Length: 336
Image 1 (cartoon, rainbow, N blue to C red):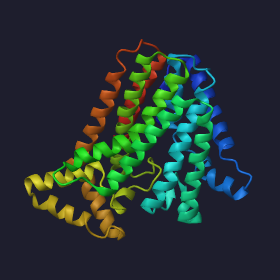
Image 2: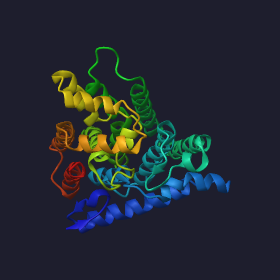
Image 3: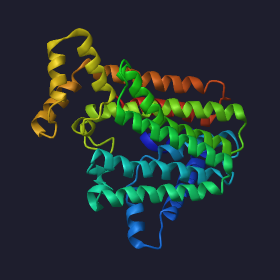
């Protein structure tokens, strides 16, 4: 058994491991090439997060999905570069909106160069992704455009909040499906499509990607509270401090509203307080780690990962399918 990709994903076949490793190495070269500019400062800013590393979760999914067709087809690696560039661009913009200071263990672009440079660098990455897409054909462009619309819609819905009478948890899951699931679905779709897989396989891997993407984000929600390390690439409790309503917090608020339990109501009041205060932030983090709401969020993460695994059932048994199933397990493992 060997290890490849994020979270120590196990791959049980040397040929598959070699294909995936070669594909990811080519993606890395493609990312560096795509982020070069004639202006040295733009190159520095655009390569800031590329060089900081990352899980490369989306390119990994492209490589695994491509195993159901011709993994060496010419469009596979460029499509993986497109997906990762798009993801990186959203991180530049997200950090501006969240006023984040750290990303992937380094200063965020906005902390280092200011909001304007961070936003424009994200736009630069989007433009480079579009340039690559133009060579992959109109269908690839359409898929990317639709996914990007869903991604932006998810971000807007998160900012606007649930409409009156809408369950905040259902609203949040819709937000996550748009913000995170849509692009990971594209990773599965591009890998299968560019490799020449049949339409049924493309559809399966697209739906698998969206379900897995939701599980992936929910695992991050759990990590933000439960982890003492920097597994998520951010300081634990960052979402809490920034007032982002992640799933454990939404479960807490729902339980407090349903039961009126004094301790839960008090914790909700603390969450509404000034969490830039380190002492208050540490107290809220401690109490949330011990609260059943965190375990409920873990169960939701497991449920979405299990649904993703079930979607794969019609695919032929092979090492690539086993790796995709293991990816579900790896995402759950991140959530504890």
